[in-house]
Image (cartoon, rainbow over all chains, first blue to last red; front, side, top):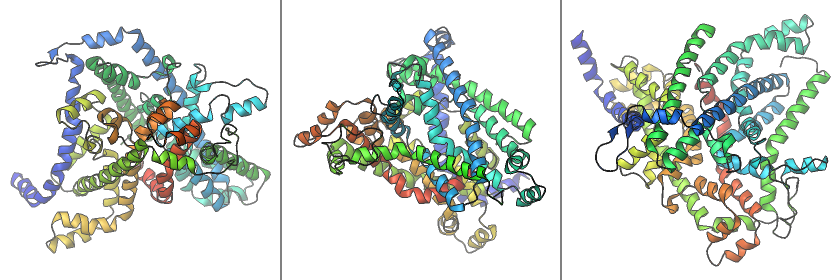
Length: 299
Length: 294
């Protein structure tokens, strides 16, 4: 048996040669930084070796009112996105399914997928212009209806809603793809039989389409739960400004600002690690949940 | 597809979808209009301008003459092209080897790669590593750190899985080296997979700004997105004029900041629009590939 394995390895030596740079890449760019995050438990020294600091940076982190706020912001922003945005691509997929004209459907799809490919720098630029006061289109429409213009980007009341809307703008089309595919795989015979039985399109949507895509809905929801702690760094980073920072600062922006900009390397890494551990636990538990509910794991 | 006779509901749904699509694309169209508006009219241009007054391309010629922007465009093209070649070579090497089911240690290597999808070192350890390797302020810092994306590797494995094993076996019997089998046999029959993953990587490189912002200190090395971020989000008009050649200052001074920003947005998305037909063809499939077991 042992000799057999040896033989197989020797036979595949070219394969291992090809694999070597790939594994080297993951060791250098993923595993070394993972090991590097131990500075969360150390004091970074400019001369000589780092000193062991135990859990001091974590204690500092958890007693900091700023971090508490950042944590709460992360939860709020993520929850808003998760619960408010989640149903929209499903509705969209249902509506697209009702369209009989192939050309019309393809055109709508081509248009709504587009924003997914823009960087958040560009999307932030577009939204800043769109929402600017008073010449942006949203304020122009509000003024037309006799409302006061609002400076959305600097309003603490509105900025989180700007996140929600820009996220919808970017991803509603893209996120509907999975549901559209699930709907497309439903046997047409089911609809034909229902039509003969006199079921209205609405009844068909509720009784045929919905049950057929519920597994997809559950899977996507569970997966989203696993990535709950990612409230959207690029979006927040590009849309935040001093006027609203207390309402939008999330863990990821905190890591960047406190850790990298202000040079509190250990504190920043501790915050990142804390987020990573929560994320890890979330993913493992959603995997469990997924196996239980749908019979399949997250991977 | 589900209904045979078209009730009023059917047309209502089409109307809602059409309106939704228009609302979705309007902000973009508006930027295009503003970027094409002549400088004499720009103060009148707003979010509700449908047709550009005094149509002109002068904003574009001025914006492209800003050294930072022109340089950023070239840097982005260089980073995207170089990055893409490296991505495809290494990702396909990994995908090819790991598709071989009887490889000793296969599941160990796959697990090792999957773990990196869940757990990461994070921003600060990444930065320290970059510093230790003396890669800060080099193009390599931006290109190498994502040379292989584990998600894309797995997507490519799914495509390679469909290559008939007999094809590979026949090549092996003919005495071709594994490298040759990968690039001469597997590649040509996996065009869709390579195209999908290339587009994923291409969009990633083109849109990358954050790591570039952190790792690069020399402004002449900034990719377009970093320049955009500076000019779109943080800058006032003075800094635009500051970044112009002396001779161009007057031209820039005549332009409105709105028009400059709009032109920058349009310039940065032109490559995406140019590749969009391919994106529609391959990306959507790739999205499904990546989620077969999502």
